[in-house]
Length: 282
Image (cartoon, rainbow, N blue to C red):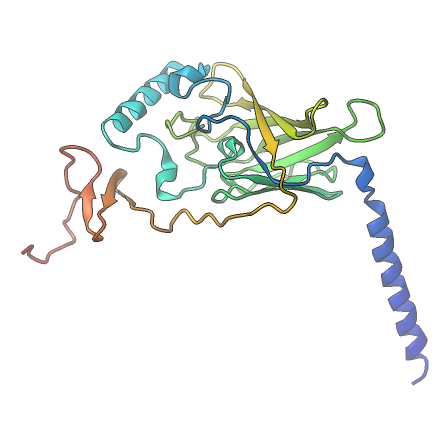
């Protein structure tokens, strides 16, 4: 049936044309150059506000009940426990903690989505820049649901700022390993402005603002990332569960010894409830 050949050829030509037009629609020159591997610029441990010390040195605008929770978390850590930090059992850090950038990040820009690929556990993000509205239902996640828009702030005809808003969280989430907690209602709203240093493009900033019911006011910090000079950087694999000695039983943290036996994490810590172990101990 000879008519099939021109139809197939016409269909192929149409598909090629559509693919080409889609490719042409993405003008890379309109977007900033965020290529490469980005690491934290500060040398001290990762914190929400990298310009201030951890714990109460962060000067977080916490409500009194959350100040008390931080005090209890730090006291437990001083005694050998994990405090209120939920990630020691490899639970996802979530936002805003993910942007502490523990092990390096890569930004991949496409017309409709900007991806932030994190080496740290479960931290990678999708930021939708296709003009969508907020959905009527957001399935809660630790990293949240992010909608962004590109801005030509300098009026140069090229985008230089990515503005992002993130909602739709689940928890528990904390700001860093001190266990400084966000509100358990998970109604946080995280706003960000991500942009290159105008004087030195090897630095990238994330101006991040957390709006949360555990705070007396919105809390803003400026994070600074440094672009690794290596054009072919090494990306390592981070598997939190591998060789993780921490065990949580009934909301209490314990440790596994080198020989695989359960042991206390704190001095004078009571053993967990063993009611389901009926075998007599030798």
